[in-house]
Structure formats: C-alpha cells, structure tokens
Length: 185
Image (cartoon, rainbow, N blue to C red):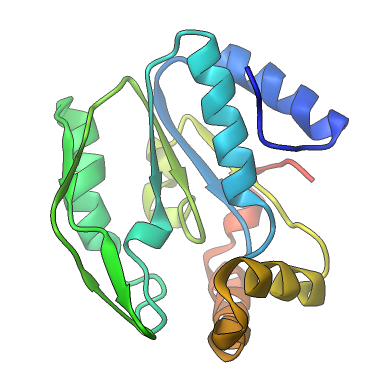
C-alpha cells in the first residue's frame, strides 16, 4: 500500500491514530496550505488498509471564496444528519467557473461507520461534541502555506488565498478551534 508522502514522525502518529479509529466522525482542521488534504488521504489509506469502512468529505466541496464557512447548514443537513441516520450522502459539491463556485450536480457517497471531514472549519465548535477525534495541523509559516496553496490552485488564486488566510485567522481566533484539537505538527 502506498501512502501520501509524510515525514516519519507524522506517519507514525497516523498509524497509532488509525489503530484507534473504527467509527464516528474525525475532523482534520487547520489553516489553508497546512497539509490537511495530504494527512486526510494518508489517514484514509491507512484505515482502509486495516479494513475500516471510511468516507472522506472535504469542506472544499462546500466552500467558495465568497462563502468561506457559512455553508455549514448544508453540510449539516446533507452529511452529518445522513451520518447519524446511517444513510448514504447526497450533496451538491461546488463546481468552479473561473472565480465563482456554484452548487454542481448531486453526488452520492456511501455511508460508512467512520466519516472523515477534512478542511478549514471542519472541527468548528458547532460540531465539537459529535467528533470522536479532532486533529489540527499548523503547517509551516503563513508565507510558506500561501505558496503551497498557490502551487496547488494556480497563480490566479493568490489574491483570493491571501484574503482567505486573513479570514481564517479571524475565524480560528473566535472559534478557538485549535484549542479543542490534537495537534499533529
């Protein structure tokens, strides 16, 4: 089994965490460009290698530049309520047209006993009492994280990503998300 590239210490921690996870909701949160997607992919691969049924949902499937976090009721309705009811997930991930994101065609994802939510605000206070694990990545400096995100999303997103970083700093300060999470860095 090939896992996404991680340093040895973080890979070992993910192996330990994967041994503890079989059901519930896991959130992987932190600022943009911190490595959340890489960690989520690695964790999900480890869980599946152990035979754990897991579904991965990314907050990027709901967020947009103009709506960084207020889409939560949609995720609550289409994902978290479905999880609680043990029903498959049906939702409308965002489809990007230039700088705009609109709800796209409905997708279907199979319910599994473990749900991994990955992305900015996934461990927000509103869901904290329902999480079996809340994980946090700080990542490198804000400048390095910006460059990672630009490399991933394209130079044309630099201005949006700078504003996003400003927004998320405020969001995390008010929500105090990091205080409730296990720090992985």
